[in-house]
Image (tube, rainbow, N blue to C red; front, side):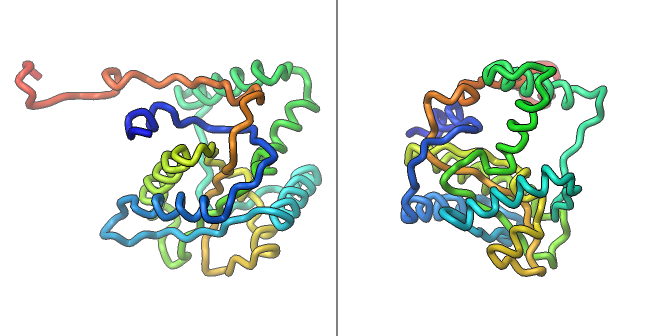
Length: 227
């Protein structure tokens, strides 16, 4: 797949086939992901790759904690948007599109809760990749580098017919992850990526998100056009 085609094709996949992903395939994706640029080549990322019984147990305990009303205390900075901002509007627009595709009515609290739980289950993907960084680094410092790596990961996955979804719901309860996979206290759990073969019949996978046109957010200087 050509790079421009891959950039245009990448999307968040929220429904996966019940089909395992070979370890060697995941390893190839990660080997490509780590080619991302980072400040002074610091490479502030490490992986924990989950599948099988351990991933199922994490899903189970994540949902149990969520239903019990345990307040998430993630290791990383949680993204937030002012209610009257364009960022909040874009987030709401996405939610409306997803709920419409899934047939979830606004007043259907049970269905909305089930949708929320899917994120805490890594969207039932056969693989979850946890990204961690060294706690000696500032909390926000590695975020740009990790973002570049995650884009590499998602684009590289397409070459193996895999779908991905970058999501933080799976790491909202770091205590569960540390207990079940032994992530040490000196590692900050930053993000998760659900990975697997996309289910073509899953309604939410048909979502098409808009982008603000580049010309609306770009200011040009020095190109000889009077600016």
